[in-house]
Length: 402
Image (cartoon, rainbow, N blue to C red; front, side, top):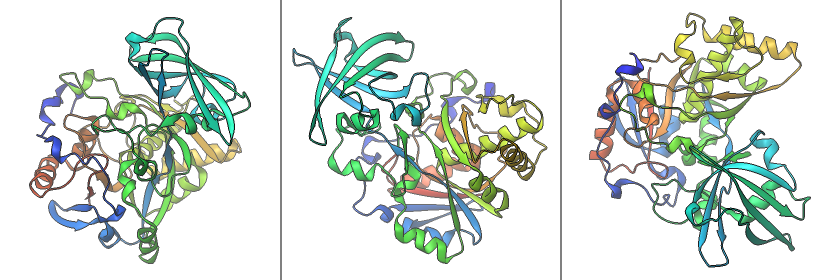
């Protein structure tokens, strides 16, 4: 199916505001779980997920952590300027969070019209008993945001420390409330390890230590990639066809150990759209490597996969990457993907997807439609008629192709 023939109006449904979960359930794994297998649907609870998964399968999860990316500055006049840090300028996220003294970020700015040119915003903080001052300076306006310079003292502090003290967890725009204490814990997975996301990998919010224990008992293995989820995940599709939509890029890291597990796995199940996007992207990067198209640029553009040779199996693709890593004596790859998965795409790796319920007319809903075809309508109709909770803090689904 050509992107020119994929009209976004065909991927919508009515989502009442009261069906959007505004808070997490008291128990992570108590959410509903819609199980879709062989075209049939049944209702379960998430704590029963291990019973639904095939033995000897491999779950791929995203171990990113959400950073406190929302900073509120108060002007001398009393007005509030909200700065939402999206991504560092000229650095990867890991390096940027270890930066000292000063740096620039691409940001969204709430109340930008009230921020006069040359006006420096200041915020007083306390970190480990030390008085800290954070300053924000407006540097440049972009089509989709602003370049903001941050300066802080004492200068030896890392930006991660400053952000942790100055910022708030950035809840999705469809959750119409301010962040609360509970969000500090519940808008993170229990296994989050690497700071860098401005939105949670929400499919994994349901996982508990007990579920991981049950997975082990059933000989279901787990492994972790790191993809830094950007605010672009909430970007609405405003064009008539998906071909006209500009897909956001996201950085991800994958290790040699994970690649070896993927190559050896009998069945791969992606936990969340971010994990799925990562493992499909790494397959295509391997194809580019095999075909001599990589040129040391580990990046995949929006529509690039659709023009590449798809006859290479994923074992061959992963083996080529592992060989390249051995030759260059590295144990992890840092990559970037802008890949947009739409109906008509043929998946190379996963046979299952664990995911929450997504917004109408979103790229994430298109991904689900690519995965299970027109049955996405049946799945979402069932969820709506059976009181499922939607979006980030909502209920879950397990979509199986086999």
